[in-house]
Image (cartoon, rainbow, N blue to C red; front, side, top):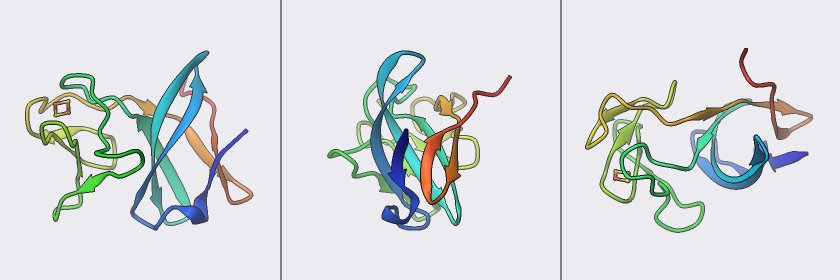
Length: 111
Ligand code: FES
């Protein structure tokens, strides 16, 4: 099932979608990188809060990091690692996605 059309996300930007992951309804952060997308659970490893300040509204720092709206943890966008803030060294939980026919869909989980 498509999560979202890739074109509806600004290149380098983010969207929030709901999806069933492992049988549970989860909020996901989808990040567009050109013709590709990455996704993580929308759960901050610091205190378990959502990272968006309003549904689908995410903060991006001047350095290009995703910033948690709750207490300012910063995450790089290759692997979702926290590089500054209260959970430095932790990571967002990545969710496998791929782009098919212009739609972001859940991909096969890594083995
Ligand atoms: S919950 Fe994200 S920085 Fe605290």
